[in-house]
Length: 419
Image 1 (cartoon, rainbow, N blue to C red):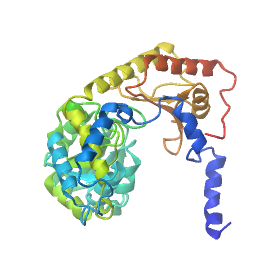
Image 2 (image 1 turned 90 degrees about the vertical axis):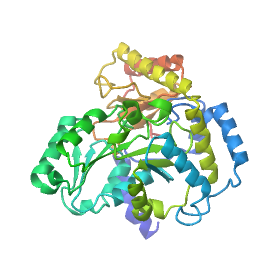
Image 3 (image 1 turned 135 degrees about the vertical axis):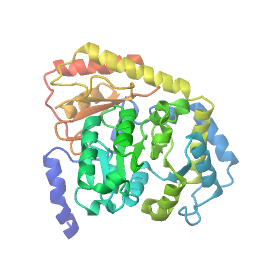
């Protein structure tokens, strides 16, 4: 064992002893997963297996003069006509002043929150915001001042109001409008599957910061392609585009591609091109990815995605209704909320026995995965069920019957090492 291995091994041993060691599945486990009903992946609209999208993609690839690679970073040879035309299309589609491509949603959040909030600014964030926002704002100039990064209770507008009011009392620049206040939220939360009260958040920010120095940043990663006109997301569904400073849409979930776009003003876009390190120092997305994104946005613009979206939302409603009808013992498995603004494809089943429950359901032919601390807060372990347009009501009924069978079994506490 090298000295480096010896140095880092205790940290791994500690996680292994506490049952929270992360692992990548082996090839044999992945082969087994293919045979199970998918209640795990982010392919919400089932477009990854859509013959229509595949045909559109092949047609797009055939029309592209370049297919492989991208040429470099955007500021060098990766700043191609194909990338520029895609950004222009996305800005028009999402009704945004400007758009900037990133190779991932993670990079986009790190890039914005790591570069835009300045010293003396305040970043307020929902306590369940994605890790990429945390990683970005911790490296920002704003973070140099203690107390500049403030969480608020998940989806609690009164808690947000209290944080802003406290900041105004202690920092005159926020009331005067010379200091910026950034509010970071997700439209659809990736682990709890609930919807942010964006209307109410906009009202609070506008009322308490009338100088216009309150800036709401909305991560729409899990809502893109599902909600709103042409799948433009929940901000568009609510008609709030003009009240939001920036929106992040990703292509690697419902849209069966990869990469992301950051929608904001032309000035913020120019600033990110100059100061966002993931933008400056990352190779641009490949031409084949650009072609894929064009193909899927053809489906959105022409309405071909709509039956998938309607099917998905119907299944989400059916799952929740049937889950509640089963009246499972809440100390063993429950939902984290009693209602949400919209039915969503993410249904977290909170359980103190998330790992054995997931293993049991996997054994019955359902691909589900446990999500445990440190990915979610302590005491919030869950089996995260993700629904897809290609799932069936029979599969949902089978999954719920599996939960009932697990509750009635004698081996609820058994945790297999493969998890």
